[in-house]
Image (cartoon, rainbow, N blue to C red):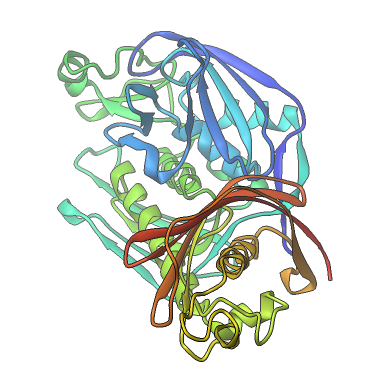
Length: 426
Protein backbone atom coordinates (compact mmCIF):
# COMPACT_ATOMS: atom_id res chain seq x y z
CA UNK A 1 0.00 0.00 0.00
CA UNK A 2 1.46 3.34 -1.04
CA UNK A 3 1.83 6.13 1.51
CA UNK A 4 -0.76 8.85 1.07
CA UNK A 5 -0.15 12.56 0.56
CA UNK A 6 -0.80 14.86 3.50
CA UNK A 7 -1.80 18.46 4.07
CA UNK A 8 -2.20 20.56 7.21
CA UNK A 9 -5.41 19.89 9.12
CA UNK A 10 -6.05 23.57 9.84
CA UNK A 11 -4.65 27.01 9.12
CA UNK A 12 -1.80 28.36 11.24
CA UNK A 13 0.39 31.42 10.94
CA UNK A 14 3.35 33.43 12.15
CA UNK A 15 4.86 36.89 11.70
CA UNK A 16 8.36 38.30 11.78
CA UNK A 17 11.05 39.94 9.70
CA UNK A 18 13.12 38.56 6.84
CA UNK A 19 16.79 37.90 7.63
CA UNK A 20 17.90 39.54 4.38
CA UNK A 21 15.30 42.23 3.64
CA UNK A 22 14.71 43.14 7.27
CA UNK A 23 11.10 43.72 6.27
CA UNK A 24 8.04 42.34 8.10
CA UNK A 25 6.04 39.45 6.70
CA UNK A 26 2.99 37.56 7.96
CA UNK A 27 2.63 33.93 6.86
CA UNK A 28 -0.50 31.77 6.85
CA UNK A 29 -0.12 28.05 6.14
CA UNK A 30 -3.36 26.62 4.78
CA UNK A 31 -4.56 23.20 3.59
CA UNK A 32 -3.87 22.42 -0.05
CA UNK A 33 -5.61 19.91 -2.34
CA UNK A 34 -3.98 16.63 -3.33
CA UNK A 35 -1.26 16.92 -5.99
CA UNK A 36 -1.02 20.69 -5.56
CA UNK A 37 2.37 20.61 -3.79
CA UNK A 38 3.70 23.45 -1.69
CA UNK A 39 2.55 26.75 -3.20
CA UNK A 40 3.67 30.17 -1.99
CA UNK A 41 1.11 32.93 -2.59
CA UNK A 42 2.11 36.59 -2.48
CA UNK A 43 -1.03 37.98 -0.89
CA UNK A 44 0.56 41.43 -0.70
CA UNK A 45 0.71 41.77 -4.50
CA UNK A 46 -2.15 42.50 -6.92
CA UNK A 47 -3.90 39.30 -7.98
CA UNK A 48 -2.14 37.28 -5.27
CA UNK A 49 0.28 35.51 -7.66
CA UNK A 50 1.32 31.97 -6.75
CA UNK A 51 4.69 30.24 -7.05
CA UNK A 52 5.04 26.46 -6.83
CA UNK A 53 7.96 25.43 -4.62
CA UNK A 54 9.80 23.24 -7.09
CA UNK A 55 13.32 22.95 -8.44
CA UNK A 56 12.18 24.58 -11.65
CA UNK A 57 11.13 27.79 -9.86
CA UNK A 58 14.37 28.31 -7.93
CA UNK A 59 15.52 31.82 -8.84
CA UNK A 60 18.46 32.28 -6.46
CA UNK A 61 20.52 30.10 -4.13
CA UNK A 62 22.92 32.64 -2.61
CA UNK A 63 22.51 32.66 1.20
CA UNK A 64 19.13 30.94 0.96
CA UNK A 65 16.52 29.71 -1.47
CA UNK A 66 14.45 32.23 -3.38
CA UNK A 67 11.77 30.86 -5.67
CA UNK A 68 10.23 33.01 -8.36
CA UNK A 69 8.03 33.30 -11.41
CA UNK A 70 8.71 36.34 -13.57
CA UNK A 71 9.02 39.35 -11.29
CA UNK A 72 7.24 37.61 -8.41
CA UNK A 73 9.45 35.97 -5.78
CA UNK A 74 9.36 34.39 -2.33
CA UNK A 75 12.61 34.57 -0.37
CA UNK A 76 14.29 32.35 2.22
CA UNK A 77 11.82 29.48 2.01
CA UNK A 78 14.24 26.73 3.12
CA UNK A 79 13.51 26.64 6.87
CA UNK A 80 9.78 26.34 6.35
CA UNK A 81 10.34 23.79 3.57
CA UNK A 82 12.47 21.68 5.92
CA UNK A 83 9.74 21.71 8.56
CA UNK A 84 7.14 20.74 5.93
CA UNK A 85 9.40 17.87 4.85
CA UNK A 86 9.99 16.69 8.41
CA UNK A 87 6.25 16.61 9.12
CA UNK A 88 5.42 14.98 5.78
CA UNK A 89 3.26 17.83 4.45
CA UNK A 90 3.09 17.32 0.68
CA UNK A 91 0.45 19.95 -0.10
CA UNK A 92 -0.09 23.37 1.44
CA UNK A 93 -0.75 26.97 0.50
CA UNK A 94 1.70 29.35 2.15
CA UNK A 95 0.21 32.82 1.93
CA UNK A 96 2.72 35.63 2.44
CA UNK A 97 2.04 39.25 3.22
CA UNK A 98 5.59 40.26 2.33
CA UNK A 99 8.51 39.24 0.13
CA UNK A 100 10.55 37.04 2.48
CA UNK A 101 9.61 34.26 4.90
CA UNK A 102 10.31 35.40 8.49
CA UNK A 103 13.57 34.16 9.98
CA UNK A 104 12.04 33.93 13.50
CA UNK A 105 14.80 32.51 15.74
CA UNK A 106 16.94 31.38 12.80
CA UNK A 107 16.21 27.66 13.27
CA UNK A 108 13.58 25.22 12.03
CA UNK A 109 11.91 24.87 15.43
CA UNK A 110 9.26 27.63 15.20
CA UNK A 111 7.95 26.26 11.91
CA UNK A 112 8.04 22.69 13.17
CA UNK A 113 6.02 23.65 16.26
CA UNK A 114 3.55 25.55 14.13
CA UNK A 115 3.00 22.59 11.81
CA UNK A 116 2.59 20.22 14.71
CA UNK A 117 -0.01 22.60 16.12
CA UNK A 118 -1.80 22.52 12.74
CA UNK A 119 -1.78 18.73 12.56
CA UNK A 120 -1.80 16.67 9.37
CA UNK A 121 -4.56 14.99 7.43
CA UNK A 122 -4.21 12.31 4.76
CA UNK A 123 -5.49 12.91 1.24
CA UNK A 124 -6.80 10.48 -1.35
CA UNK A 125 -3.69 10.39 -3.51
CA UNK A 126 -0.45 8.41 -3.21
CA UNK A 127 2.63 10.31 -2.10
CA UNK A 128 5.30 10.82 -4.72
CA UNK A 129 8.40 8.91 -3.67
CA UNK A 130 11.85 8.99 -5.29
CA UNK A 131 13.71 5.72 -4.87
CA UNK A 132 17.13 5.54 -6.50
CA UNK A 133 17.92 2.78 -8.97
CA UNK A 134 21.63 3.64 -8.87
CA UNK A 135 23.89 6.20 -7.20
CA UNK A 136 23.58 9.88 -8.13
CA UNK A 137 26.84 11.83 -8.06
CA UNK A 138 27.09 15.64 -8.13
CA UNK A 139 30.36 17.57 -8.03
CA UNK A 140 30.49 21.32 -7.54
CA UNK A 141 33.26 23.95 -7.67
CA UNK A 142 35.36 24.46 -4.54
CA UNK A 143 35.43 20.83 -3.43
CA UNK A 144 31.70 20.50 -2.84
CA UNK A 145 30.27 17.08 -3.76
CA UNK A 146 27.31 14.81 -3.17
CA UNK A 147 26.64 11.10 -3.51
CA UNK A 148 23.05 9.91 -3.22
CA UNK A 149 22.88 6.15 -2.66
CA UNK A 150 19.86 3.81 -2.66
CA UNK A 151 18.37 3.60 0.82
CA UNK A 152 15.05 2.70 2.43
CA UNK A 153 14.60 6.12 4.05
CA UNK A 154 16.37 9.47 4.14
CA UNK A 155 19.79 9.48 5.75
CA UNK A 156 22.27 12.36 5.50
CA UNK A 157 25.99 12.07 6.21
CA UNK A 158 27.50 15.53 5.86
CA UNK A 159 30.85 17.23 6.29
CA UNK A 160 31.46 20.98 6.50
CA UNK A 161 34.80 22.76 6.56
CA UNK A 162 35.21 26.43 7.55
CA UNK A 163 38.40 28.29 8.34
CA UNK A 164 37.22 29.38 11.78
CA UNK A 165 38.24 27.79 15.10
CA UNK A 166 34.63 27.55 16.31
CA UNK A 167 33.70 25.45 13.27
CA UNK A 168 36.65 23.84 11.49
CA UNK A 169 35.84 20.47 9.93
CA UNK A 170 32.67 18.84 11.28
CA UNK A 171 31.01 15.55 10.31
CA UNK A 172 27.69 14.02 11.30
CA UNK A 173 25.40 11.20 10.26
CA UNK A 174 21.64 11.69 10.69
CA UNK A 175 18.55 9.62 9.92
CA UNK A 176 15.82 12.02 8.90
CA UNK A 177 12.66 10.93 10.65
CA UNK A 178 10.07 13.23 12.21
CA UNK A 179 11.03 12.73 15.86
CA UNK A 180 14.76 12.58 15.22
CA UNK A 181 14.64 15.74 13.10
CA UNK A 182 12.89 17.49 16.00
CA UNK A 183 15.50 16.30 18.51
CA UNK A 184 18.69 16.49 16.49
CA UNK A 185 18.29 19.11 13.74
CA UNK A 186 15.39 21.48 14.30
CA UNK A 187 16.94 23.86 16.85
CA UNK A 188 20.13 24.48 14.85
CA UNK A 189 20.30 28.14 13.76
CA UNK A 190 21.63 29.82 10.67
CA UNK A 191 25.06 31.40 11.04
CA UNK A 192 27.30 34.07 9.57
CA UNK A 193 30.51 36.05 10.04
CA UNK A 194 30.62 39.54 11.49
CA UNK A 195 33.43 40.53 9.10
CA UNK A 196 31.08 40.01 6.15
CA UNK A 197 28.10 41.99 7.47
CA UNK A 198 29.01 45.29 5.81
CA UNK A 199 29.53 43.85 2.34
CA UNK A 200 26.42 41.65 2.62
CA UNK A 201 24.18 44.53 3.61
CA UNK A 202 25.55 46.64 0.78
CA UNK A 203 24.37 43.87 -1.58
CA UNK A 204 20.92 43.63 0.01
CA UNK A 205 21.58 40.68 2.35
CA UNK A 206 21.54 40.25 6.15
CA UNK A 207 19.63 43.47 6.81
CA UNK A 208 17.44 41.67 9.33
CA UNK A 209 20.19 39.53 10.87
CA UNK A 210 20.93 39.88 14.58
CA UNK A 211 22.05 37.82 17.54
CA UNK A 212 18.35 37.02 18.05
CA UNK A 213 18.15 35.01 14.83
CA UNK A 214 21.72 34.21 13.72
CA UNK A 215 24.80 32.62 15.23
CA UNK A 216 27.44 35.28 14.58
CA UNK A 217 31.17 34.51 14.52
CA UNK A 218 33.86 37.14 15.04
CA UNK A 219 37.57 36.41 15.03
CA UNK A 220 37.90 33.27 17.12
CA UNK A 221 34.70 33.68 19.11
CA UNK A 222 30.97 33.10 18.85
CA UNK A 223 29.21 36.35 19.81
CA UNK A 224 26.02 34.66 21.01
CA UNK A 225 25.74 33.52 24.62
CA UNK A 226 26.13 29.86 23.68
CA UNK A 227 25.67 27.25 20.99
CA UNK A 228 22.76 24.82 21.11
CA UNK A 229 25.07 22.01 19.93
CA UNK A 230 28.85 21.92 19.55
CA UNK A 231 28.22 21.15 15.85
CA UNK A 232 25.20 23.44 15.46
CA UNK A 233 26.65 24.73 12.19
CA UNK A 234 26.71 21.25 10.66
CA UNK A 235 23.22 20.43 11.90
CA UNK A 236 21.81 23.58 10.31
CA UNK A 237 23.41 22.64 6.99
CA UNK A 238 21.78 19.20 7.22
CA UNK A 239 18.41 20.85 7.85
CA UNK A 240 18.93 22.98 4.75
CA UNK A 241 19.50 19.82 2.70
CA UNK A 242 16.19 18.41 3.98
CA UNK A 243 14.32 21.57 2.99
CA UNK A 244 15.99 21.92 -0.39
CA UNK A 245 15.27 18.29 -1.34
CA UNK A 246 11.56 18.96 -0.69
CA UNK A 247 11.77 21.09 -3.86
CA UNK A 248 11.68 17.81 -5.81
CA UNK A 249 7.98 17.67 -5.06
CA UNK A 250 8.29 14.27 -3.42
CA UNK A 251 9.87 12.18 -0.68
CA UNK A 252 13.48 11.28 -1.40
CA UNK A 253 14.61 7.88 -0.17
CA UNK A 254 18.39 7.91 -0.28
CA UNK A 255 21.56 8.01 1.76
CA UNK A 256 23.01 11.44 0.97
CA UNK A 257 26.76 11.82 1.51
CA UNK A 258 27.50 15.53 1.26
CA UNK A 259 30.89 17.25 1.36
CA UNK A 260 30.68 21.03 1.92
CA UNK A 261 26.97 21.30 1.09
CA UNK A 262 25.43 24.56 -0.09
CA UNK A 263 22.03 25.65 -1.33
CA UNK A 264 23.31 25.68 -4.92
CA UNK A 265 24.67 22.15 -4.47
CA UNK A 266 21.49 20.93 -2.78
CA UNK A 267 19.40 22.16 -5.69
CA UNK A 268 21.80 20.57 -8.18
CA UNK A 269 21.41 17.28 -6.30
CA UNK A 270 17.61 17.62 -6.36
CA UNK A 271 17.74 18.19 -10.12
CA UNK A 272 19.96 15.14 -10.61
CA UNK A 273 17.60 12.94 -8.58
CA UNK A 274 14.66 14.16 -10.68
CA UNK A 275 16.60 13.47 -13.87
CA UNK A 276 17.40 9.90 -12.82
CA UNK A 277 13.77 9.35 -11.94
CA UNK A 278 12.70 10.73 -15.33
CA UNK A 279 15.11 8.46 -17.22
CA UNK A 280 14.08 5.42 -15.17
CA UNK A 281 10.41 5.99 -15.87
CA UNK A 282 11.00 6.45 -19.59
CA UNK A 283 13.07 3.28 -19.88
CA UNK A 284 10.45 1.18 -18.15
CA UNK A 285 7.36 2.30 -20.05
CA UNK A 286 7.61 -0.12 -22.97
CA UNK A 287 4.83 -2.21 -24.51
CA UNK A 288 4.95 -4.77 -21.70
CA UNK A 289 4.32 -2.15 -19.05
CA UNK A 290 1.70 -0.48 -21.23
CA UNK A 291 -0.18 -3.80 -21.37
CA UNK A 292 -0.09 -4.01 -17.56
CA UNK A 293 -2.05 -0.79 -17.24
CA UNK A 294 -4.27 -0.72 -20.32
CA UNK A 295 -6.97 -3.40 -20.75
CA UNK A 296 -6.97 -2.99 -24.56
CA UNK A 297 -5.65 -5.75 -26.81
CA UNK A 298 -5.44 -6.38 -30.57
CA UNK A 299 -6.83 -4.78 -32.62
CA UNK A 300 -7.58 -1.85 -30.30
CA UNK A 301 -4.33 -1.39 -28.39
CA UNK A 302 -3.13 1.78 -30.09
CA UNK A 303 -0.04 2.77 -28.05
CA UNK A 304 3.40 1.36 -28.83
CA UNK A 305 5.68 3.28 -26.51
CA UNK A 306 5.87 6.10 -23.95
CA UNK A 307 8.68 8.58 -24.57
CA UNK A 308 8.19 11.09 -21.75
CA UNK A 309 6.31 10.84 -18.49
CA UNK A 310 5.94 13.33 -15.65
CA UNK A 311 3.46 11.83 -13.15
CA UNK A 312 0.19 13.77 -12.91
CA UNK A 313 1.56 16.40 -15.28
CA UNK A 314 2.50 15.35 -18.80
CA UNK A 315 2.99 12.34 -21.05
CA UNK A 316 4.23 11.73 -24.59
CA UNK A 317 3.43 8.48 -26.43
CA UNK A 318 3.91 6.93 -29.88
CA UNK A 319 1.70 4.99 -32.25
CA UNK A 320 3.34 3.57 -35.36
CA UNK A 321 0.80 3.37 -38.19
CA UNK A 322 1.38 0.55 -40.70
CA UNK A 323 -0.53 -0.74 -43.70
CA UNK A 324 -1.16 -3.93 -41.68
CA UNK A 325 -3.64 -2.14 -39.39
CA UNK A 326 -6.95 -4.05 -39.69
CA UNK A 327 -9.02 -0.89 -40.16
CA UNK A 328 -7.32 -0.09 -43.48
CA UNK A 329 -9.16 -3.05 -45.04
CA UNK A 330 -12.33 -1.00 -44.99
CA UNK A 331 -11.13 2.61 -44.50
CA UNK A 332 -10.39 2.81 -47.38
CA UNK A 333 -8.83 0.02 -49.49
CA UNK A 334 -7.85 2.31 -52.34
CA UNK A 335 -7.07 5.35 -50.21
CA UNK A 336 -6.05 4.17 -46.71
CA UNK A 337 -6.70 6.75 -43.97
CA UNK A 338 -6.71 6.06 -40.24
CA UNK A 339 -10.23 6.75 -38.91
CA UNK A 340 -10.32 10.02 -36.97
CA UNK A 341 -12.12 8.37 -34.06
CA UNK A 342 -9.20 5.92 -33.71
CA UNK A 343 -6.70 8.76 -33.71
CA UNK A 344 -8.60 10.21 -30.75
CA UNK A 345 -8.87 6.76 -29.19
CA UNK A 346 -5.09 6.37 -29.38
CA UNK A 347 -4.70 9.81 -27.80
CA UNK A 348 -7.09 8.79 -25.02
CA UNK A 349 -5.11 5.61 -24.34
CA UNK A 350 -1.94 7.63 -23.90
CA UNK A 351 -3.90 9.94 -21.60
CA UNK A 352 -5.05 6.95 -19.57
CA UNK A 353 -1.42 6.02 -18.96
CA UNK A 354 -0.83 9.51 -17.55
CA UNK A 355 -2.92 8.41 -14.57
CA UNK A 356 -0.92 5.26 -13.80
CA UNK A 357 0.90 6.81 -10.84
CA UNK A 358 -2.07 8.85 -9.61
CA UNK A 359 -3.84 5.98 -7.85
CA UNK A 360 -3.05 3.02 -5.66
CA UNK A 361 -2.87 -0.39 -7.41
CA UNK A 362 -3.22 0.99 -10.98
CA UNK A 363 -3.26 -2.55 -12.41
CA UNK A 364 -6.67 -2.96 -10.78
CA UNK A 365 -8.11 0.22 -12.30
CA UNK A 366 -9.51 1.22 -15.67
CA UNK A 367 -9.99 4.67 -17.15
CA UNK A 368 -13.40 5.56 -18.62
CA UNK A 369 -13.60 8.69 -20.74
CA UNK A 370 -16.66 10.78 -19.92
CA UNK A 371 -16.48 13.65 -22.39
CA UNK A 372 -14.56 15.08 -25.34
CA UNK A 373 -14.48 18.77 -26.14
CA UNK A 374 -12.96 20.94 -28.84
CA UNK A 375 -12.07 17.90 -30.95
CA UNK A 376 -10.42 18.88 -34.21
CA UNK A 377 -8.81 16.89 -37.00
CA UNK A 378 -6.22 18.85 -38.96
CA UNK A 379 -4.61 16.35 -41.35
CA UNK A 380 -5.17 12.74 -42.46
CA UNK A 381 -3.04 9.96 -40.94
CA UNK A 382 -1.84 7.37 -43.44
CA UNK A 383 0.31 4.18 -43.42
CA UNK A 384 3.93 4.91 -42.59
CA UNK A 385 3.13 7.81 -40.26
CA UNK A 386 4.37 7.87 -36.69
CA UNK A 387 1.82 9.50 -34.41
CA UNK A 388 3.24 11.40 -31.46
CA UNK A 389 0.68 12.21 -28.75
CA UNK A 390 1.41 14.95 -26.21
CA UNK A 391 -1.01 15.27 -23.29
CA UNK A 392 -0.97 17.36 -20.15
CA UNK A 393 -3.16 17.13 -17.09
CA UNK A 394 -5.37 20.15 -16.46
CA UNK A 395 -6.56 18.98 -13.05
CA UNK A 396 -7.13 15.82 -11.04
CA UNK A 397 -9.74 15.72 -8.31
CA UNK A 398 -10.16 12.39 -6.60
CA UNK A 399 -11.06 9.95 -9.38
CA UNK A 400 -11.87 12.47 -12.13
CA UNK A 401 -9.28 13.99 -14.41
CA UNK A 402 -9.30 16.63 -17.13
CA UNK A 403 -6.55 16.73 -19.72
CA UNK A 404 -5.80 18.23 -23.09
CA UNK A 405 -3.78 16.74 -25.88
CA UNK A 406 -2.68 16.81 -29.45
CA UNK A 407 -1.41 14.35 -32.01
CA UNK A 408 1.43 15.18 -34.37
CA UNK A 409 3.05 13.64 -37.42
CA UNK A 410 6.50 15.01 -38.32
CA UNK A 411 5.88 17.98 -36.04
CA UNK A 412 2.56 18.96 -37.62
CA UNK A 413 -0.67 18.75 -35.64
CA UNK A 414 -3.11 16.17 -37.02
CA UNK A 415 -5.64 16.16 -34.16
CA UNK A 416 -6.36 17.81 -30.82
CA UNK A 417 -8.92 17.39 -28.05
CA UNK A 418 -9.84 18.13 -24.45
CA UNK A 419 -10.89 15.10 -22.39
CA UNK A 420 -12.52 14.25 -19.10
CA UNK A 421 -11.92 10.79 -17.67
CA UNK A 422 -12.81 8.85 -14.56
CA UNK A 423 -10.77 6.15 -12.81
CA UNK A 424 -12.82 3.13 -11.66
CA UNK A 425 -12.17 -0.40 -10.43
CA UNK A 426 -11.89 -3.04 -13.12
